[in-house]
Amino acid sequence: MDSLISSRDRLIVALDVPGPNQALSLVDQLKSHVGYFKVGLQLFCGNGPSIVTRILDRGGRVFLDLKLHDIPNTVSKAIQEIAQLGVHMLTLHAQGGPDMLRKARETVLEKSERSGLPPPLLLGVTVLTSLDQAGIEHIGYQRPLDDLVVRLARLSKDSGLDGIVCSPHELELLKKSGVGEELSLVTPGIRPENAPADDQRRTLPASRAIEQGASYLVVGRPITTAPDPASAARFILDEIDRARITR
Image 1 (cartoon, rainbow, N blue to C red):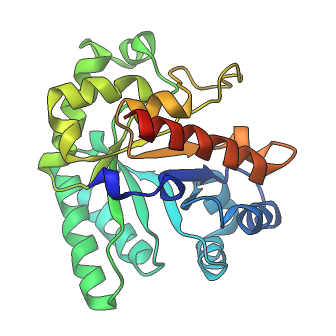
Image 2 (image 1 turned 120 degrees about the vertical axis):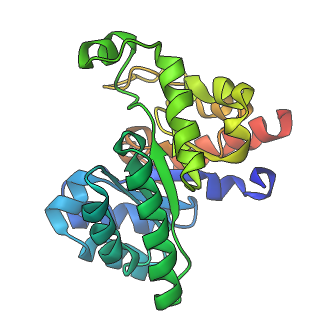
């Protein structure tokens, strides 16, 4: 199914900006070049659900990246509100466990059936790309990072989620494990060649990520802080196109 996704629809721009004016300006500049806009904690907490509605009204599709993680009932009630917005993708921490993930899936399907809106893709977050092996050991995990990612990816699949969010460095691992063949793989930590990694620890260029099996790429600062965001987006689309031919 991934082969049917256009290059444009594979690109998600992260609107990690403080205010609605900057976010909506980026949507207006980029909506003809990219498939989705990621609304994360900063933009959502500062502006509330209305920012989602305003992006949708401008013709953008929304990836709501709130990484929900709480007891199953609380997450279910949050999803009941989110499902009414019409977002296209939604993240949950896979570490919330199977009961939370399954309840989220049931709630999404139930609310979508009632509203007539298509259900958003539910994505499990495995391990944040800001963490490396030393980071997860500091938290208390003793298993290798790769093992933890595969375990959480398999939990996401078995709980009925549509995909996972993972580092580009784990794409090949997930494909080899088999679980990656059955899920959409959404990959942040994408940086053009020779670009600074910022606070990301595990990054790859767009072309390498697509070659290794990514379904969708999340790109923020390399596009949103560029002098010409549309030109920066087109540069990454060219990388995706070339990689798809190679793949």
